[in-house]
Length: 451
Image (cartoon, rainbow, N blue to C red; front, side, top):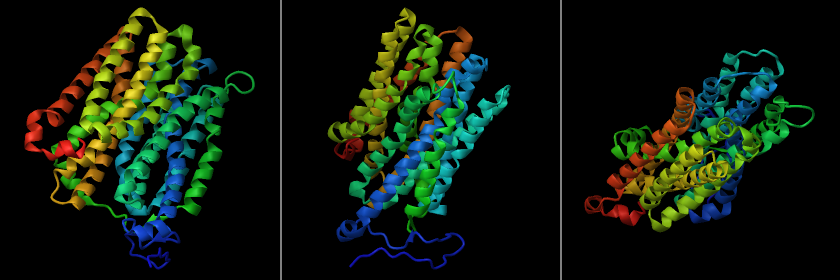
């Protein structure tokens, strides 16, 4: 009979052990999975989603705060405002690589506890900044950087959960984990505009204080109820092989276009409404709809990729993103807020679908690249981590082009033209590497694998 054995026997210094380490984990064994594994995996998935959701919530918190800073006496320029949006993007993207390796080093339980608890730091800093008159811009910038701690949670959470599930069930589990985290963006943009208006005037301190009890709860749940797997070890060889494979960089480039668009637009959308359509600034409260439908569309994009092929759906999403960008350009030129809002909703839906389809392409591509199934799976997992980190930098690029466009010309048009050109490059790249007829001649299994 297969059982889970928990032990407190000391391990070597390279793998510190505690009470909730599991030594034997066999998710591919049907008997083990049904008797023991499924319950433990689902428990860890639930608490992982809670912590990751809060990570995204704190990561994008500044996207709502900056909209109201002028109402409480902080007259920051457009450029300064966008730096407050760019910095958490940048820090969050940079942290995704070390966060991925933290799970094998410290264990999923310990690292989820640490990464969740660290979210108290930016919340405390934001509270201090907004309750003290005359807080300098540099402190707000430092606070924005601390919010980037929430951006790294995605990589460690995905890496941790991937170890718990068998290959046949990993897709759904990771899809739920990713969507649950992405929904944190919508939760923040829905709740914070309401919370800060409780009482008299605008109380920005509430935007930070509201998350603290939930962060403490998530930290406690991770510590008392989650588990760590001794078999969850770093795989440096697979990372080295992945880094030398051109498809790693191709897929990372495409993920800049999908996830980079999602997170970049999520940060910028509330400010763009306020800046470009002053008469409609009350509609900032509806900005959460973009992140919400983008998150929900992510698993749908994965499902469509399974049905019609990942490259085809990815190509479709980039064509759609280009058309949506043209819609935004027209709305800015004609001062049509309804067209502006609807075009951005389309961009969020398509970016979400693209997130799912690009992730679906990765294992299919590497199934044709590696010598054996085990190596293919490990390389694909490595690419998911690399692409996740690089893709998050796309959010930095999106907000940078908006910043330079608004500062240089006072309009969004130059930025939208640059984004449109980028989507054109993504369309060309997808077709060139994965849809040309001669690719299928050279690698015929790609079509069958769902690419």
